[in-house]
Image (tube, rainbow, N blue to C red):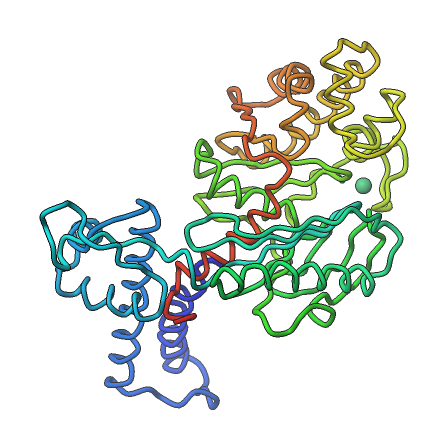
Amino acid sequence: MGRDGTERVEDGRGGAEAAATRERTLTPRQERPARGTRERLADTQQGMRRRNLSRVMHAVAAQGTLSRAAVASRIGLTRAAVSTLVDELIRAGLLDELGPERPGRVGRPGSALAVSARGPAGIGAEIGVDHLAVCAVDLRGEVRARAVRRVGNRGRTPRPVLADLAALIRDVAGEAELEGLRPAGLAVAVPGLVVRDTHTVVRAPNLDWHDADLGALLPSELPLTVDNEANFGALAELWLGGAAPADFLHVSAEIGIGAALVVDGQLLRGSRGFAGELGHVPVWPEGPPCACGGRGCLEQYAGEEAVLRAAGLAPGADRVGLLAERALAGDAKTRAALRGAGTALGVALTGAVNLLDPRAVVLGGALSRLSPWLLPSLEGELGRRIAGPGCEVVVSGIGSDGPLLGAAHAVVRAVLDDPAGVA
Ligand SMILES: [Zn+2]
C-alpha cells in the first residue's frame, strides 16, 4: 500500500501500453478510449511531479533536517526544481522551514527543512485476542497519542469488538487533532487471514471470526487498510528495525504464531493474501487438534498457551513476562517448555527456510523476549535439518508493539510515497 501512489501511475501507463498491444493483436477494447499524445504527456509529467514530491519527502524524512541544496544533491535535481517542489510541500503543511541552518547565513537556500510535526498522521490499530490498541504516528515517525484497552475478545462477535475499537480510535484521533495533527488514514492489524486488498477477515481462529467485513463496522471518514498482524509486524521490522536485511522471514508470537516473508523490501503476500501461516504448519501430523481445524500445528507446541501449559502455569495477565521471569529464575519446567517450543519452531522453520531461502529469520513479538531460552534448541534444530548452509536467526528489538507501529507507519509511508495524495 505504501507505494500505491507512485505505482498506480506507472502501472496505469504500463497497463495502457499492454492494452494497446492487445488491441493490435487481439480484439478491439471498447471500454477505454484511445488516449492522445498530449494526454499521455500530461500523465507522465503529473506522474513525475508526484514521484519527485515523494523523493523530496523521503530525503528529508531520512535525515531529520536537510537544506534545499542538500535535497537537490541527494535526489539529483536542480536547486530550482527542488525549490518549486519544496514550496508546494510547505504550502501543503508537509514540510517546515526551520530558518537559517548556520548562524550568520540568512536566506532561503541555507535554511533547514524538516518534515512537519503537525499535518497528516497515521492511525494504527491492533485487534488482539485480549487487547485493543490504537496509536497515532506523525510524519516524523513519532508516536503522538496512544491508547490500550485490556479486553478478552475471544468469543465476542466482530460488531462489539469494533465498536470498542472505534471508540479508542476516536479518542486517539481526537488527541492527535489537539496537537495539530490530521489523521490521514487508518490501518488495522488483525490476528487472522485477510483477503488481499480488502477489509474482509475470512478466518481468525483465535477470535472465532469468519468472513467479517471490518470496513462496514469502522469509522468511514478515513481511508482504511486491514491486514494480518504478522504482515504489519514484519513491515515494522523492515522500516524501524534497523538491522533487518532486505530479505527475511519474520516470525512473531502472541496467542498465535504468525510469520511474514519480506523479499527485496516487499511483503510476499501470496495469491489471496494468506501467506505466512507458519503457526498452522504441522509439526506432528497426529498431534493435538488446533483451532484452524488441523492437528499438530506449530501453535500447539510453541503458541503462548501451549508453552504455559507445558510449564504448568495458568493463563493470566502478562503471560510472557511470567514465562521470562520463571525461566530467568532457573525454573526447570519453564525452561523445558521453552526448549520444546524452540524445537518445534526449528522444525517448522526448516520447511520455510528450505522452501524460501531467506537471508535471515527474525524473531519478533513475544518470541524476542523469550529468545534466550528458545534460541539454543531452535538454532540447533534448524542447523541440523536445513539443506543449505546455516540461516542466521536475529532477535528483533521492537518488542510486542510491532504490529501496531507497522500499521501506523504504513499510513505514514503512504503519505511519504504520494504526498500529493493528501496535499
Ligand atoms: Zn492450526
